[in-house]
Length: 199
Image (cartoon, rainbow, N blue to C red; front, side):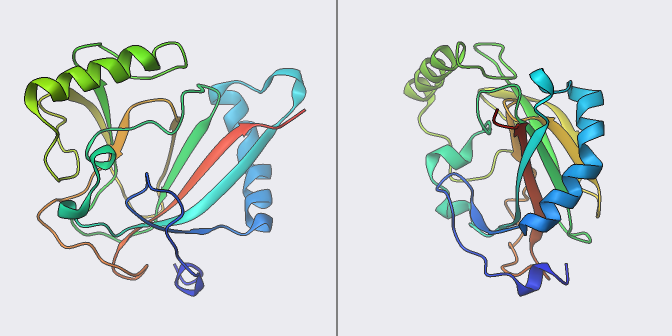
């Protein structure tokens, strides 16, 4: 956390409900040396011995529930490529905002999206909202009425979880508790993505 407070956080993409600061390249390189054998073991080594590439950010959730745009009110995926692995390292010492929840979309039965299944999923979500309206301005909790929560990874300090980025998921955010705006008082994580390195 002492390194995080020195970073210049900024909004990077419209999907993430907060601000981010890139992890230094030298840190990513050191982590990748340690983590690559574990990624190979649990997710399968990239074809052709290409190894892994990594990107990572300090991430701080700062958007209050009432300001969430529609895409931020639903479980999401980080992409449709099952070869992309996501990591969440929880750096907050405690508080009301927790780990990561995983979901199944009820009308399609999908828990993960691929390039082939995404059009069917997107059409089903549009049909859901045509029947019941847009979801309220809040972070997803149990997923009702269109999703079911299948698992919650608890966000304990210094704990990291790894999962395929195409699995439907969302941060566990307490909609009734204030969100801190600094690394010292907010929901601070390191988010990383691992992809097969370019040939």
